[in-house]
Image (cartoon, rainbow, N blue to C red; front, top):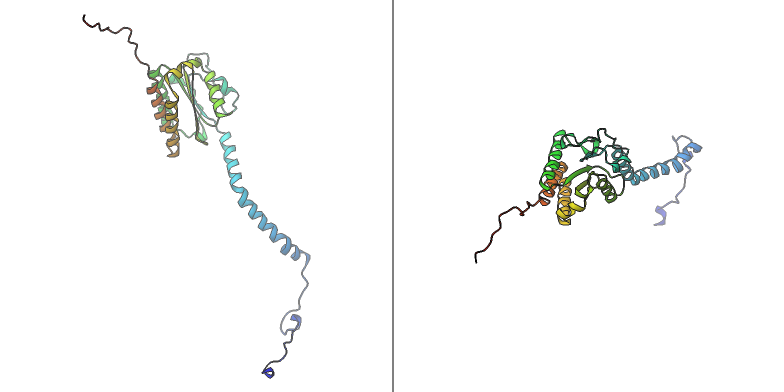
Length: 238
């Protein structure tokens, strides 16, 4: 059997007929093969890892440059003065009316004129039903949400009867704060129910409608009960 096999002979590549002579790799080729390609792979990997974070940061910067929406009984509350996104409005010395509410809306709030009119009407109806003073802020709070909402409340002409609703569309956070008198007419359950309705509407892409429904709910819940002192008393016969 051994006669069928001959010893294997290794022939150098440069001696094969028809092949060009081998050349030593240049320094550039070496760098490309052992440095450039790994660096490219690492760059792609880093981009895949950091792309979501960069996208969130870009959205945060865009949101920070947008003016929020403020609808309230005063056109320039003190708590908003430190927020550069909300410009101070003139005419604050005049008695405010629902028809002249100051509106700052741009970009992320994305309310149509018709939706803003609906929000104004809902505020007016809630005021009329309850005797309280409802205000609305839609945008990213300049401070911690609760502290920001309380700052808006204290800036109202009559904080005791004020109700301030703060809605952050980006985080879908809701804060509803009430003054001393308003707290007697609105309990925590009413506010929680209204906030849950806004969050559901925001999830469904109907933020304006959700806020309108919440204001209607709060206005009805805080409805003033007519006094019975002037009613005819019933005296049983003896």
